[in-house]
Amino acid sequence: MGGRHRDDVWESPGCLSRRAMTTPAGSGAGFGSVSWWGLSPALDLQAESPPVDPDSQANAEHGTPELDVLLLGSVDGRHLLRTLARAALWPGRRFHFYVLENNLEAVARHMLIFSLALEDPEKLGLQERSEIFLEVWGNALMRPSVAAFVRAQASRLARLVPEPDLLAEELPWLNLGALKFRERDALEAVFRFWAGGEKGPETFPVSRLWDLRLRHYLGSRYDARRGVSDWDLHMKLHDRGAQVINTREFRRWRETGIAFELRDSSAYQVPNRTLASGRLLSHRGERVAARGYWGDIATGPFIAFGIETDNESLLRTSNGQPVKTAGDITQHNVTELFRALAAWGQPSVTQGDPKEVPGDANGTREPAPSPESFTIHFLPLGSAQALHHKSCYKGQFQLLYVACGMVHLLSPELGACVAPGGHLIVELARYLVDVRQEQLQGFSDRVGALALAAGFTPQAGAGPSETFARFSKPGDSAPIDAAMESGTPPPETLALPPEATNQPSEDLTRPPQGRISVPESFTLPLESQASLEALAPPTGSQTPEQESLTESSEATFPISNP
Image 1 (cartoon, rainbow, N blue to C red):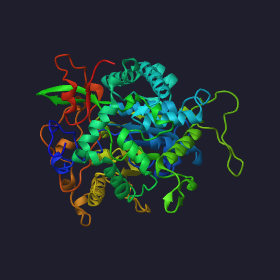
Image 2: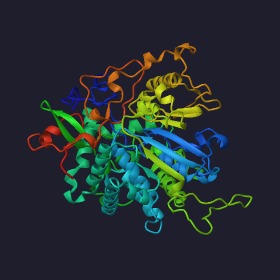
Image 3: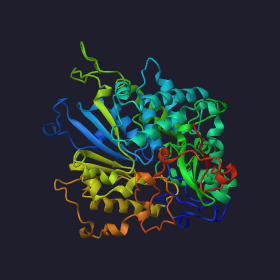
Image 4: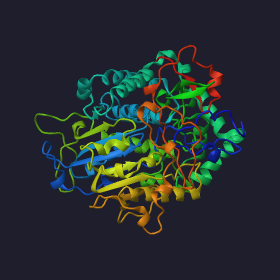
């Protein structure tokens, strides 16, 4: 499978051009076009936000300072989970998280993850909840018992999405009011696909699709895939600070898609449908709806919770080798997160004494948080450049987070949504194994220029970081001319090509015509613009044979009614 392939019939928006990334050995596109997990450690967003100003942020209704955060491409909710888990360490605050993703499957996974995290502890124990999370979040195959849980939760969410009143009653922390009606209909369709377990594994044959992606990615190196895996781990991820990722667990994930093996390997049998996404592909001159796996097959879900921890004993080494693996650390961190989140899952009391959390050294005790203390608002796909037109968003956010695959959306229009004095956090490309060291620096420079043009300056006192770039917005919110700063090239020289910009929601699944030219400064692959929103099941005359579909640019499978 070396050399050129028949797969250049289409190309994902925002990806490096096939000419720039393809090598004689394979595609070099291990990041994929859809993100299912984050490529940076989880952050406590309160620690990243400006200090509380009670005079300007006090809310008349709740009498509590508020924190409004806009997150672009956060994908898996890790930053929200860590922020809520550590809320007891900070003065009381009400959170509004505004989440914007590029596909509705990511929105659905957010909802599933938080439904699991806030499940009643009496119904689902802490260890079981943590293990279910790890399998749903990071494994291509699940145990039958976990698959049954996903089907049950998906059926419940499919029932709630079209019923706003019932949704508000059962999930008070969730707000889908900003989504368009067709996006809500498509979101319901995603959940119904997840719940349709009676159709069997061939509806989404993830093991076969994973292997096809791997063959395409490695090309002629496929037979030497173990050596390639070891090279990427030791010469790239380990060198960039992820030394705790173990060779065995990384090889297993690269081969099978199973990152967290909590039971015997034979227990993992059921495809994880939450990792499926839809696309329109070009087949014999026609656009065909197909479902496949287009996520990461290069780095893995080890970075988000697996390389940093508050428990330093988990990071100790023996003879220069880490004692614990990234899987061990991930399981510990997730378990502790869910332990802290148990208080958030309990409804607030209306009579008698409020629930209490352990007091501080002075013996003072504060009411425990409740689901009414935070809200997750999901924004319409492709709305990043239009938010500033709505008065409710202009100057609204104290913190803006932008994932590395969404950097192209960082603009003066988006900067106008951040309040003066607000902060900006941009995820860098440190843990993308297909990115060379010189490209990492080029991307970091490009982020700085785009942030400057959007009206931000480097955050005072922020230490150097290869994982995140931190900026703040001056009191004067007028955008800064990047060309007037010392030696910084104007943003035009660093801008993404037009094909890489966010498309209107009607065209989210439309492959670009022709190839994307790559500027000298590095351009990251973006998250998929595709969703099930525009995908109707193909008719019999349109459905290509499976062999033909799998020869397209990525592993695919025809979509049928769930």
